[in-house]
Every structure is written in C-alpha cells, then in structure tokens.
Amino acid sequence: MNLKRWFFLFWSCMAVGAVITVVSGSIMQWTDTSFGFMGLEAAGFNAFMMAMVGLLIGAFSQMGFFAYLTLNYIALSIFRKSYLWNALQGYTTVFGVFGLGYMLYEQRTNNWFFWLLPLVLLACSLGVAYIKVKQTNSTAFVPTAFLMFFITFIEAWPALQGETNISAIVFMIIPLFICNGYQILMLPRLLQKKITTDSATSAKPVA
Image 1: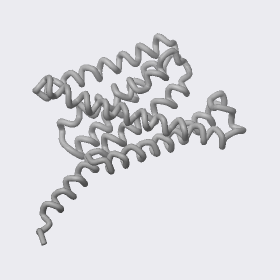
Image 2: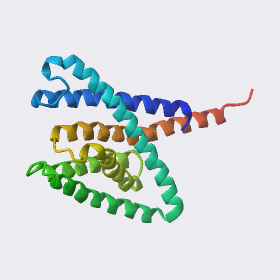
Image 3: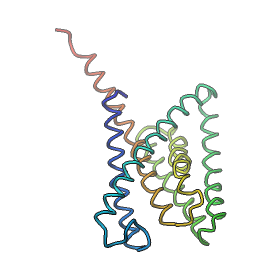
Image 4: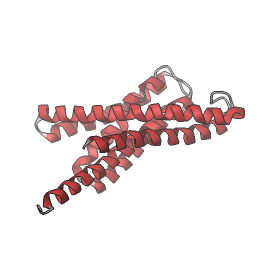
C-alpha cells in the first residue's frame, strides 16, 4: 500500500460516507419529520449538512479501519498462532451481539429494536464476510465479521451512549457499516494492483 493508493482509499471512503449519509438521512427525514436539522422545508440545507457529517463519518471509519489493521498486526505477533487470534475475534463478535442488544435494552429504545438491530447488523456482517471469502480465502471470514460488527459497534458508540432516538442510531450505523465494508473489500484490489504493477516493473527488460 503506497501513499497514492492510501489517499485514494481515504478520499473515496469519505465520498462513500457522504453519499450514504445523505441517502439514508433523507429517507429517515421523509419517514420521520422530527428527524433532521430544520425539517423538510430546508431539504437543501439538510442535505449539505448530512454530506458534511458523512465526510466526517467516512474519515472516522477509516481511522477505525487502520486501527484494526494495526491491532491485527500486533495480535498476530503476540499470539503467534492465527487460529487463537481468530477464536478471540469470533468470541468478541458474539459477545458484541449480546452487548449491543443489552445496551439498547437498557436504554429502553422500544420492545423490538434492541434485538432487531444486533441481528440485522450481524447478518449483514456475515454477508460481507462471505463476499470477502469469495474475494480472498476462507481465513478472512472471522476477521471480516469481527471488523464489520464489533468495530462498527465501537465506532458507533457515541451515538449509542444515552441515545433513545432510533433514527439517530441508524443514521450513524449505516454509513459506518458501509464505509467499513467498502474498505475491507477494496483493500485487496488496491494491493493486487500494486503487486501486478511491481511484477510488471520487475519483468521489464533493462534497455
């Protein structure tokens, strides 16, 4: 991963965050008139503000993504055996499902959201992990599921703390999840391009 590709991933992730935030925020605003900055009569202003928030969410998601990559590197050097680190990630993901449900239940969001959100988030995380396996290999399943669920859960912590507005929670989680999914699925493509370019350069005959 060189600097050029890192910048591409950084700005494209922020752009994805902005687009998804505007789309999801607009949908929630149309379905819930109490959601938004100034109501439906200021749709243009709201779209602009949501895009700005989406850019910040994209940047925040990338911070979490690279923090996980650093954690993964350190953990593998400590455990030495990848299956031990994968087992810990799998256990933490399952624990996170119950932890998220319990947190929402404690806040009394309503009588169904506290279990629906964790299950939907888990199902989507497993879906992304399945795509990642098809893209790379089977060893990527647990780390991807961990990133998509637990890291998204941690990144969305500010929105979950003391928040009982379902729209606000969903408004934060959806862009974070999609940005994390975009990064984890885009990374192998960027690395593959670098490998292909390096191979072509090394194979070029010397004049």
